[in-house]
Image (tube, rainbow, N blue to C red; front, side, top):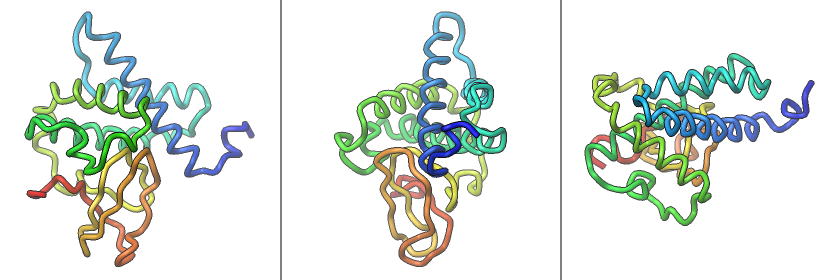
Length: 176
């Protein structure tokens, strides 16, 4: 078993989320001189690289790819629809976010907003966040009791501390 797999599983997954985000950013940056690839293709490549480098199992990489795509689509949708900055999406001061992560997230979300039309018709269920998943920075709201959880970096989503349910949405959705 590699040293990576001996780490705390939640810590390993959050570190891998950030690594995959960095790879997506690199791929999108390199592709700008030709054509802008879709977010899905960049995430697929980042997922494959994580498996190839034995950072994650196939199942873990698949899960993180879904989480990363969800976060990027959500951030891009917010930026595109409101014209606001990421600090408004996160609902906390960006000084609390690690600078490297802020730059990666902002870069990918900005590029992703170009492809936003492809994701406009997603079902509500696809935009929900669930206990056990990993999410990037931002504030989640429990769909049952309204309790908020703020993530200042990538993190594991716990059950709601207010009512113990497992479903959340981004706080900027549905008119907030």
